[in-house]
Amino acid sequence: MSWKEVEEGAVVKGGTSSAYVVSGWRVKRPIIDETKCTNCLICWIYCPEPAIVRREGAKVAIDYDHCKGCAICEVECPPKAITMVMEP
Amino acid sequence: MTQLEMAKVVALQGDEAVAEAVRQCDVDVVAAYPITPQTIIVEKLAEFVAAGRFRGEFIPVESEHSALSACLGASATGARVFTATSSQGLAYMHEMLYNTSGMRMPVVMAVANRALSAPLVLNADHGDMMGSRDSGWIQIYAENVEEIYDRTIQLFRLSEDPRVMLPSALNFEGFILSHDKERVRLIDDEPIRKFLKRPAPKHRLDPKEPLTFGAIANPDNYYEFRMQQAEAMKNALTVFEQTENEFEAFSGRRYGAVDAYNTDGADRVAVINGCAAGTMRATARAMNSTGERVGVLAVKLYRPFPAGEVASHLRRAKSVVTMDRSMSPGAPSGPIAEDVKSAMRSAGLNQPVMSLVYGIGGRDLSVEDGRKIFGLAGGGVLTCDASVIYGVKG
Image 1 (tube, rainbow over the protein chains, first blue to last red):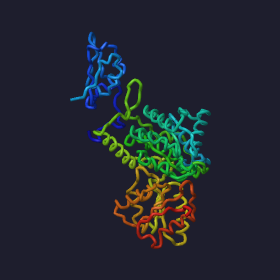
Image 2: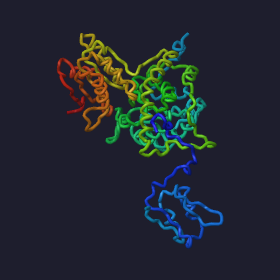
Image 3: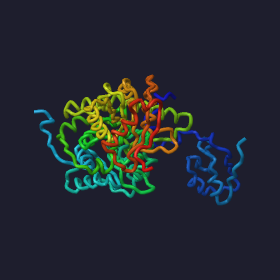
Image 4: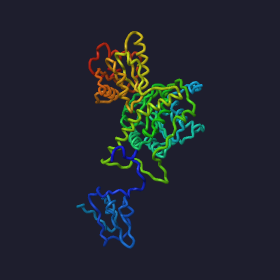
């Protein structure tokens, strides 16, 4: 974008992080082992991005577009159901 | 009867003149932390609030970093905002200086210039503002108390112009101007309000419509934001002239981006900013009355630097003396010297320049010193660029 077009003061609408793809930031990706997951939603609480998706009648899933690969979910998961693995 | 004839004439200290102008400019929010020699400004404003003479919100904060943070947030809502500081206080604001200019907030700040610690000193030099020179703020150096008053009013108009939208700093030497009582012709409230206009900002922080200011840019577009800011600073040069035209129309007063005294008839010209310009002018007047040919170019607007105008006044001089009231250890010469040399060389002017440092930490500059300084640059002595630290005990 040309310098003439960027928004003065870098002002953007609030609440727009869901429209911003951060998957390119990731070195490792979280993988959920559904056999260990109890759907306690601790990962959903701790995730700093909208990357943990709650699903009706199913266990949580990862929205990889919004996962930066910070691994907070892996550390916080009580039954150790989340493992970070290297991106290919 | 003109506005000028109607004006009330009073005796004010430099700091009091700032406070009076802020009160008249219909400022919405003031957030500041006291520091000598700026303190009188915030004390006066607090007094105005207590006496019901100032309708703005006065936010007492715990530090200068918080002061400018509060100003930044208030400015994002579209409020007219003012703060003041000196020396270490300005240094403590440093991080927020860049946020304020980067988010394009037209905050106006008074800086009663004071040298930086250590060792601790309360008196003036320009080291505080020069340390923040590249923070993207418009910078003006005033020479007397009436100019301090007028510039405070002008800066709100200049900063808030949609073509500019940049914060600005009004500099004046601590104690020499902040505490000196001088004659000021006050202007009525009404013409000031008309002059300031209060243009609506493009973005306004509103809880009903949340916005992020100064969002992350990353290497793919940070450069473009910086470029846009630099262009706004360029625009400020044009808007500055329009501001002065409009201000002159109702006040009858004008200062210019530079003030040239006998620069066309001089073989030596001193280029200087701040209040010592007056001392150098008095020196030049005395010297010229006895047949010498010297001139003074006072740089009033320092950022954006009026390079073309500076060069045009130095065309006829045989040699030039630049006078910096700040030290830049390890640099080839002081900031004024470097800007002036760059402006001259870009305009194809190759006369020798003596870059001189003076008045550090409040060391006084007298007319006698002025004579010596013109002497150093005269009589065929200066044949190539030179550098002088003037007035230090050897």
